[in-house]
Image (tube, helix red, strand yellow):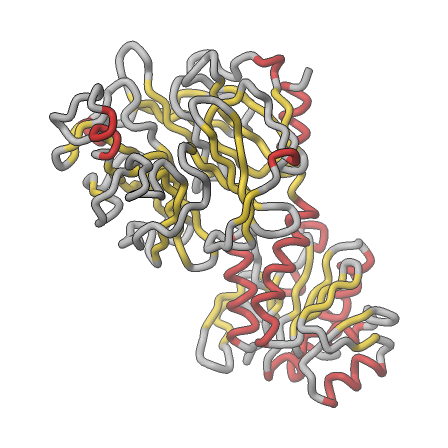
Length: 463
């Protein structure tokens, strides 16, 4: 729960919110009034919950925002002080930035706590007079209390909030994948730390009917979705699950979406392994797939695979779809494309499908493109994240912040990983001895699990 006053500081609000939004953490804005709340630099936000209607047990933490209005409206407000203390008494996160830290001090929760605030004498004095141990650091974590100094520390403050909330809420990870011996069918592995994985369900299929390249996304309604293709008929199917325990056929998808696009034709047995991402900012799903140029025989492997281009459609309801378009402007073979968002930027994580040579050293490696919009235009791919002859990238948030990216050394040799503080990088290899993935695994997708989901999956599928 974020508490901004009228006349909040725009940057102190927006920078942490970008981090929280990119981590898909639900935020409720609560204040002394509902409706428009104005920032000192002109931003307007919407408060949807009155402070006197807050039920503390429904939240994981509280954040008191700074700004000119904090002292005027929030300091010494009995309701604000009561809520701060209730959050603290229940061992929930109690956080604040700039003048918001003074609210915590005046509410009495900073006694013998190391904390920071905006470095002016009046604010520092109020922290110290209320028993706090003042620090000049931009962000200070002392147990469940987090404080930041102001605009300079706002971005770091957001990253720390995400890390703390993920540690509190993120129980583990699911790897939905196929296997070497049963290509194209659905299996589960699970991990608590994102590094050590255990194959579930005694190594048996999770769903006998599903066939495809598993790629699960959480949708607009909180349910999970993935796309499969029926083996005998080539029927593209949207699969859905309420809880990741049971999967059902939601509906057929139009074949014409994938079959023929701008001189490229998808193989009807897989339709270019469709991947899907739901973008909360636009309320759209983007479906990506790849297909080769017509007229190039598969036996001509170098030219066939280098002719692969990635296409996409968008939809908000799986009933009406945009026209299929090329995702990238550049002329380069790309497959296995997944879309992710961090902050305000969209990242297309790709496999460079041109043959690796001394003249094309990035060939057959994982690379990343960036865009300010879901549908592009996307930048030319950056440098190699992986060595060559790697495919099927998937990414997860690390519990301690940053990202893990997994990719497969093919065909089915082993999984490797890289890590970075941001999808922008810099990426570095994870020592393979730190990773333990069942040798049966072939490519799929990884996603974060809540405590409820983690427990339910273990109970249903663990030996």
